Image 1 (cartoon, rainbow, N blue to C red):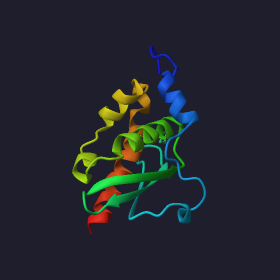
Image 2: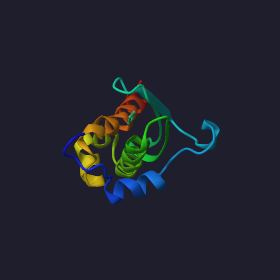
Image 3: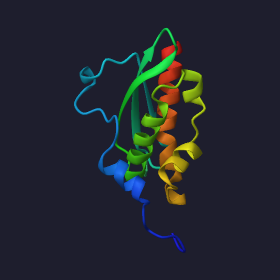
Image 4: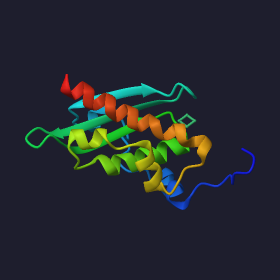
Length: 131
Ligand code: FES
């Protein structure tokens, strides 16, 4: 992209190198209540998000995720997983791509679509939980 620095902010790099709540191994490693899976229409990458829900308080107790996505998707979903924990399902649905972008210190503009992937997978997981 002309005129843009080809540099990720430090926080993006840090979350990419040390992703929070990433699901290592297969799904049996995490006791989840619902899962959401989405694909990114722009690049074709995929994301799965697993949630554990506290049924009494309707809050997200814990999350795990995995993806074929890029560094921006990994960093964004790592950030999202931190933002979502402890929130009610309704609050978690309100986390926006801009919240993730603000938390990370701004993704390059042409990578903004990558931050939507985790968010959409979380939405799907919550919808599946409520079904
Ligand atoms: S390029 Fe596909 S998620 Fe970033």
